[in-house]
Length: 217
Image (cartoon, rainbow, N blue to C red; front, side, top):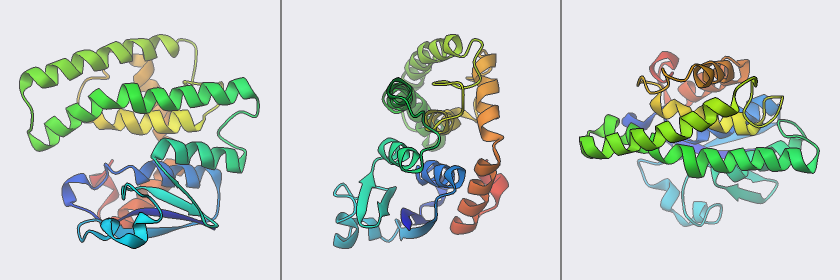
């Protein structure tokens, strides 16, 4: 059985923002048997030697599959999809396209969106810094809007882990109006989050962190 090392306790400000949501969503989509090992992040459990054997960087999330540990959310998602033979194409070029968009979500799109989110959440950074991140995000949004012309999903004809990952990246700006000029991205985002597995994930996550689902949407 797969063990997901996720947050059992975390500082209230970041509940609903943590990357273990991505992994649990994938596990719910794929129907793989799993359990969640909730790590007490506020108590420093992730810094202890026991967890260091799972992830040498001592970051969450990570998974362990019959003794095989995988860290980094993008790598975990690709591993799970290939293990299950779902949410990723069987052909080489299709798998490459999904991998490309996973990399794009993490290395290109997420950086400015996460910076905007942190500035808005914690009041850090200047107006100039936020404006620069908004400008950069707009560049990536314009590319995504073009890519989604005539498409439901970003990488392939069907929903894949690339869409799952990109949708969770877009959540960083869900409380802003930054997606308003991009109707295709907006429709894409809502289409992804309308999936039943996402709703199950939110419910399970809220129960684990003892919060209301509506507080983390």
